[in-house]
Every structure is written in C-alpha cells, then in structure tokens.
Image (cartoon, rainbow, N blue to C red; front, side, top):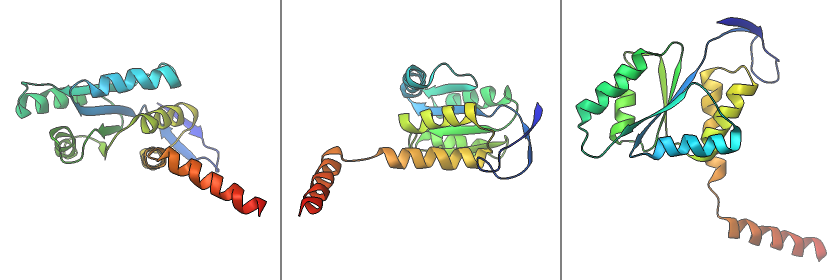
Length: 161
C-alpha cells in the first residue's frame, strides 16, 4: 500500500491510498478466461484479474461458494465484471456486495476490459472512475461500421457541394 500524488487532470483529489483493485470476471462457460487472454494479447500481461466461470453441471450453490472463497482471498477493492445482467454470475456478484468491498458492472466486453487494464496500469484512479471509463469504452465500442462509413461519405458529399 502506498500514498501517491495524483495529477488533477487524471483523477480528482490530491492524495489517495493505492491498493490493488482486483478485476473479477463472473461469467457463463469459459468466456471470461478467453476474454482475459484476448485482452492480454492487446494490452499486455496483467495481474489482479481472474475469471470465475459458471460451468455446465455446476449448481448455483457451488458457484456461489467458489466465487465467495476466491473473494475472501483478496485485499482491497474488487470490481466484478459480469457477462450478463440478471444471470447467475451477476446475481452472485450482487449478493456478495453485502460481504465484500466490491462493485458490479454487467455486460463486460473486450473494449471495456482493455480500457480497465490500461487505465489501472497507467493512472491512479478510484473504482468509480474505473467503472465510468469501462462503461464508456463498452458503450462506444458497439457500433454499426457500415452506418459510420455511410455517414462519412454523406459528409464528404456536403463538403463538395
């Protein structure tokens, strides 16, 4: 644990106590494990991130206990990234908020995870700031490329006329 001065333009405030913020992906199948591998291909190897997967044949109670046992090993704040709002993984994350210092975001995708990895490694930010950045990256990544190309072409037509 260390105390650092944060640049005012990155994160508001003057001093913050830094402890590792752990990202825990709660998901159906092996989605989270593969998502981490994909993010690391782009953003580089990272620490303090793990997927806890709900696998076929696993009961809700077994999954809850596996997630709970892992959370109990962690220090500092936890940011849970669930794959699907209302599914068992997100519900387990929300239930564990009563017991652990954790925050839950649902709808994790690759751009969100990359943003969270890069932001955490390059800036001293609060969990709230990380959540906002992750949500913004996820929202901005959902696009219809042919519509963007059409709008750009339309814009060029207006410039020429």
